[in-house]
Length: 221
Image 1 (spheres, rainbow, N blue to C red):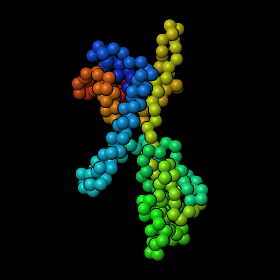
Image 2 (cartoon, rainbow, N blue to C red):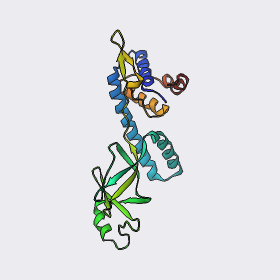
Image 3 (cartoon, rainbow, N blue to C red):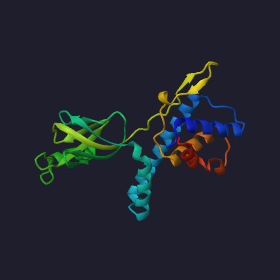
Image 4 (cartoon, rainbow, N blue to C red):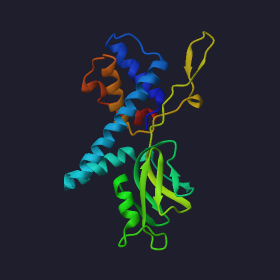
């Protein structure tokens, strides 16, 4: 997996090759983080698209996308207070919600009254029949139970940071201990970096990135 230093130095190499000026570490952090957020949103959009299609090709695409998103897939339990549970702070996209081992069914706000009045599929903790309506960052559960809500979700991306100290000449020197590396696989790091370079107007060819993943393996970064 690529370190933030590898990605930054690779970006600088292509910028120098194209005589496109420089890229400060702070600008790199800002721009790369913006592009990785956009990249995650694109993946989630594709995931929703193929999930709706329900075709074998769609299932293959879903598997590929979920593999890329794997570093951001989390499971957590949040308290339910008077029937309300709040999403975790880094929540980005829900995969599943459960009370105990029972799935929680999403309903619209217009369906809330009908579900409460239903005599066929009534909200019932005893029968393991749970529903939820979302308000902002909250799940409002029917019935209004207490306990914990189990959530499988995709978290927001973790910002990368190229950390540094200063040498005797007051120049920035990379510090692994002060840095935050990307969580993406090598191919995703490559695509995010390509997006960033395009945004700042750096011209490059596919051959410039041809050995991106292999060089990471060779250098151990």
